[in-house]
Length: 166
Image 1 (tube, rainbow, N blue to C red):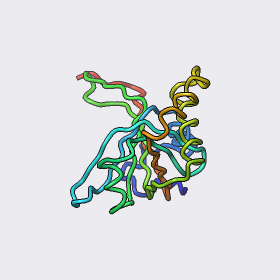
Image 2 (image 1 turned 45 degrees about the vertical axis):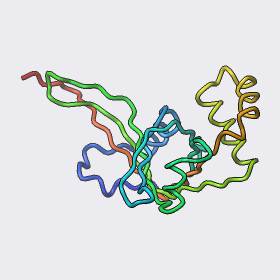
Image 3 (image 1 turned 90 degrees about the horizontal axis):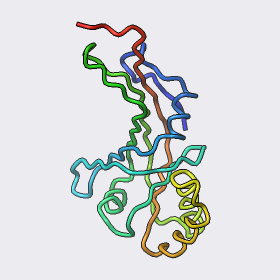
Image 4 (image 1 turned 180 degrees about the vertical axis):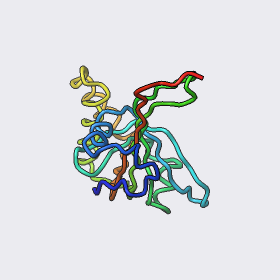
């Protein structure tokens, strides 16, 4: 996965690669943007977990719009928004975000699906690993996993050091 900020117009708002990877690791959700099977744009917020390399996993029902969309158009974008601080008196907003581009894949092996479920449990329910494992096994037939393999990502942020009041 290549870090590439060259397409960001505001070069004064670049996030470095280490910050972008940290946000990718810790953010709770992102917006998965796809092309639906009928060609229309389709975006949906989802929980996810990053594998620490170049892929994320998301869980979904074993049937549905996401799976139909990626079966036809596997190229996707994933946007994560981290800390946001609205500054109304300065008419601006501090923010941090990461945008990733890649290819979505379903039909993973059972072993990879269970590994992804355990990664999700470790991230989203870290104090409930044993209970989460039981739940993952019990509901395994009712869940599917999508892996998104990223080719590139970029990061952008805005920090206001001296707020202006109007």
